[in-house]
Image 1 (tube, rainbow, N blue to C red):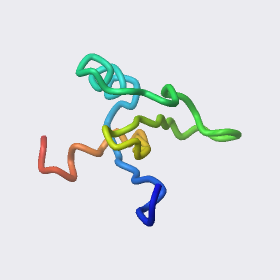
Image 2: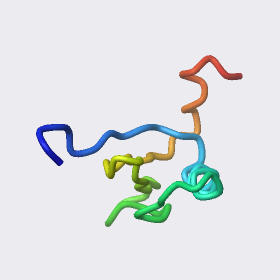
Image 3: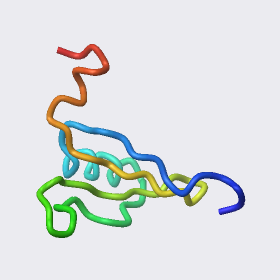
Image 4: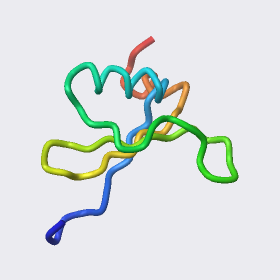
Length: 69
């Protein structure tokens, strides 16, 4: 859209749980949690209020980067 970026990716501990939380809050999941084609990495896509795509990538240690233990 416009001259902005295509999408941003965020690492989360559990993609399916994050999608559920986003959906409960009224957000839009555009690709359900699942493995990438021919791979094992779990991803999903959600849409922000402006229509930009946000990719969620499962990383069991994502919260550690935020100082959460």
